[in-house]
Length: 492
Image (cartoon, rainbow, N blue to C red; front, side, top):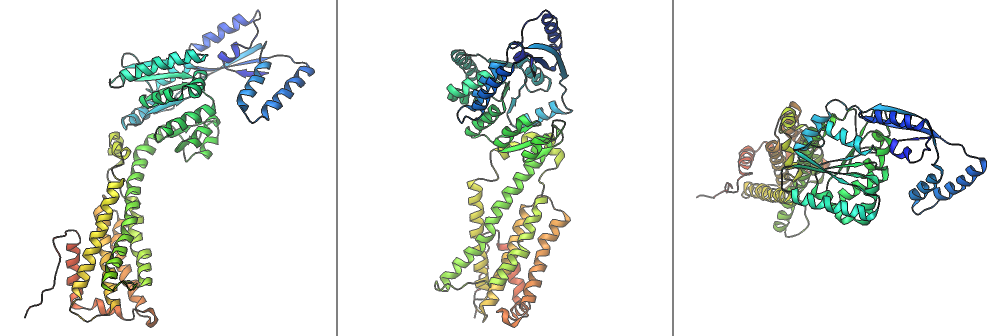
């Protein structure tokens, strides 16, 4: 006994006196947007089953073309079936699916529909959810054929039409079934890859789970970032192959939700996931990654400049414990709290999905922005070191005192950088940015009270100096403009 769709089962059943009436009823059900499943059976003798079982075990254990061998063995058995009945399940879209697809399209994201449904059902679903545009605003091209030459002609015709209409505002999409797709991927992969680059919308019907994964791999080879979303066990391989996998947990189980990177309850939640959370994540990751390079580079450049003054002796300007404590407790907390930063409100982003274009072009995270942060770190290191050296050029002081002053100025400077790069302030961000100053002075003050620390009484001596505050304020003003450099001029 077996079950399958009408197109597959029709070639395997035997015609009986009751079959015409049954097929007429199946055709009547096919008028609506329903998924149809037929049930059929046939009788096998013990010898026939034993012979077929041996062939199936041999095909299942082969290492080359296993799926094709299993399909060939199954076709030997699937003939002369007697139809038992037919069932139909109505296809109903979830709430918000057309609006979600329309919003994501405006953000410059292309859509491919990979389904196991028959061609007519897939097209009807695509029209109902605004996946493709009806005539005359849209045009639907068909790639079909069972033989290699038929697929070649059909693929060439569709590819030529795509090249001609690529500059037109008309919405052009193509439809391909599983048989034609298998031949195209095997014999005409280069032409199909060009077609995938030219098209913004595609419908692939009657595809297997392995073909879904192959299509995702093909799009990744075209330098596309792929996101796969599904709700059934047939979509697991596709989701795992994509750069980002999203599983919809629903009536078809939790297989995709467990195999995916993100799990959502409804398809309409994808709009918020991409437009809001995806964009916020990109902005925060861009700042965090580049600031993580900027912060240690400032210290490294100061050490490099100091090495020229110290005669390349290998002496470190900063105390290792103070440097480690400031890096862990002072400069890291403001950056971690920056995950709460929002440059635009969620309502604005949802109303204007075109804002996502600059994320796709990488305007906030690219080699030029990294060069800008590198240049900023070099300039800030020069400013901090020059002002610190000039402040103590004509005074008797220990190197530990110079180290504390330079490190405190780095803390202030990096806090101002975080404040300038922050778009929206919350209470936590304000406490993290300006509270790190209190943490820096308290930690170093406690540390300088121990005689064995190497900086005994240095913190209290430095803070109580009359010129500490004045030089510190002058540093804050000159940290962002190269024209302002305070220089001590000796007068008689």
